[in-house]
Image (cartoon, rainbow, N blue to C red; front, side, top):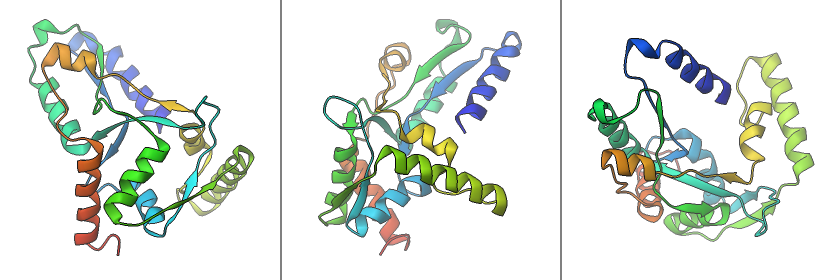
Amino acid sequence: YGQSKKAGEDALFKHGNSYHALVLRAPIVYGPKDPATLILVKSAAKRIVPKLPSRAADGEKHYSIVHATDLVEALVTLGTADVTKLERGEIFYVSSGEEITGTELIRSMSDSLGVRTFSIPIPRFLLRLLSNLGSWYGAISGRVTVINRDKLNELLPDYWTCSNSKLISKTGWRPRVFLAEGMREAIGWYRKNGWIG
């Protein structure tokens, strides 16, 4: 997935002289209708969640996030910006500005669900084993599995963070939805539409 995104950017820049190319990169995107976050929400609803291994000093994974609404507004803002004030080929990052830990992400889910969750530590070797098995099964079945070697590249790093300061300073865009409110909205939508019980 990451390789295809990078290939898309490279293709864009290859023909960048034909138009004013700009790139917007997003971190974890969540909100109503998002099936990726739903996987973790369903685990939280069952009160047992995985705790990924981390070599960071605090033992935590660190993430930037953005609510789908803010991402759309950032895309519109960048797409309608005065390009004479932006350099051709500029790369921007969008996020809520919050740096959250894996524990904080799970807590926002459990608070919104009204449950208490328990974390099960997943050793690094087990992640690698499961990713290999997932890739093997996917190759045979033709189906994409929840965990595979590509997904492992997202799960192992301890920091998936970015700064939105450049986007803010150059376009005036501001995030409006933060984790606590955004997760309540997303989980409310999941419940209303029968995605979770």
